[in-house]
Length: 114
Image (cartoon, rainbow, N blue to C red):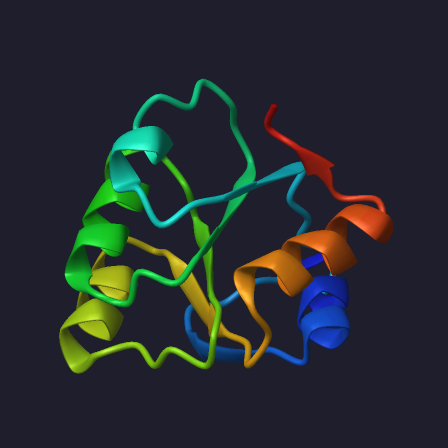
């Protein structure tokens, strides 16, 4: 699914990072438990989370995840933005809940990791 479609479907905005209009992710994983994220063995993932602190960025870096969507109207901190930029991670924010965001994207065809 194209990142531009994800932004439109979830009424999200890009906080930092860049991507082309054709950039896509193959799967999504929704979690606030970063220990669960570290167990993933997939590539080209969108991480959907409500954990708005630097730990989510550091975990994404370790898991080779380049796209994070913060839910529940959580706002990225300056430290998160700095870390995301340093690690070439695109950070987005949506007002939708984790459940709603996941459901919308699944219904639109984005596949889950599991």
